[in-house]
Length: 197
Image (cartoon, rainbow, N blue to C red; front, top):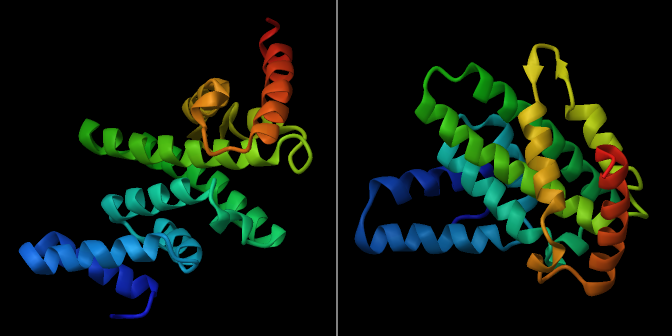
């Protein structure tokens, strides 16, 4: 089987969508193995940035989303985790911009799915980082996404992020209980301060 590179992942996606039967199953299996490998992180981030194929982008952001609460995330260095978060925040802006510029409602709907998954990824990183590694999550998200900046309206993204952060944390069953409790206490206080409730 081919090694894991951005080009090979793209090629496998193309084969998956242009073949049937045994060949399609083979490509699907190869992509699933890639999505659970340590090679997933840099390749998925690269493909989200440079691929214009929304199906590829959605698959890659979903692969990242499912790996954040796994040992795969823990195996990343602190610097690598910070770089992934930086990219995820940039994706929120990028997909907000693309939604704004989309020529029709079908494209906007597809982009909104990718934006929602990007926001869910940011939420998952936040939940793992509250309060020690990212002590001002809510304030930082308001600063970054609470206004129109450079012509890009990211306020929908802010609403998606806040909605995701306000979701009962017991739905995140793979989040360690101690971290879940720390995140709940922080978020209850931070969201109350923001919304004065």
